[in-house]
Image (cartoon, rainbow, N blue to C red; front, side, top):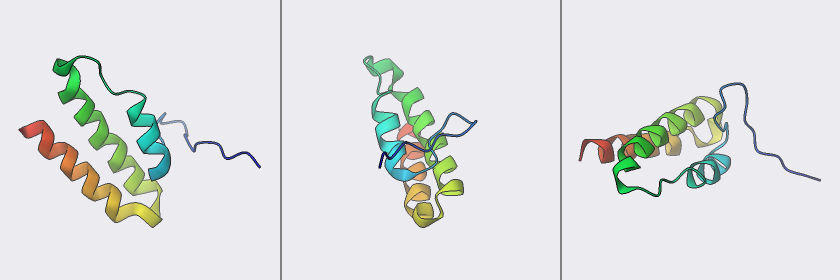
Length: 72
């Protein structure tokens, strides 16, 4: 049995376990790009909260943490 990441037309992962891998693959090499990565992180976790109902609360909390990091 092959488990494939769940990514639909949005291009964003639909499950929390896929989101972490997807985001780590996009971690920036430049410190100046970190703010944009946190914005992407918030967007991904908000999408996961809407699509992965078993992890809705955790994904919502992670999106909030990412938004707080953008504001720092």
